[in-house]
Image (cartoon, rainbow, N blue to C red):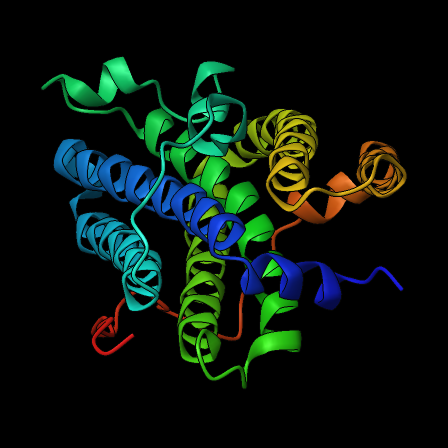
Length: 261
């Protein structure tokens, strides 16, 4: 029977598919680390109190990239080039979601609206990351090879999501509410479409590596399209709501390390 656990277990058990999975994940995390580092450096003077939290966010993403590289190294594997159609982070940027890399590569300070855009984009993408890691934690938290990494990354992603909620609410209370809701909606609708396309691409590449029969590939693609249909109808709304999190000041604590993965 096809299930999330059996599907990921198959990917985990094969060196080539595991290497592809970790390479894709590491690339996205490292890109997120760079983006957050540049945003922290360019935060406007009026929002400098946010810089340490943004820096911490970026440091966590860099750490996650190192974790995925360490998991490959542990099995004697080298990273592979990430197929462009599976590059979630770059596809989001290419479709105008978040802050443009051209802006981040410059030296001009960001505006308050830029910071709001960054937080709204992060709130949407961290929702996805938190849910994905929760799914893996549910099935593989006690796995001898990846369990510790899954638990650590899942904890971090939950912290990132809590931080986005708290900071966006702070901006909403100071008059940015309408801009936040508009940006969240635009980001969410774009993200679910890109997530669908990336999911289809990842499964196509995995199917090629693992030699899946056509019937299985078709069933997986149908499932991905069904998830998109639900998200396009109502599911996107979970990505735009804001509530004060139980974890307050989630990125104000010292970062954990990625030693001994």
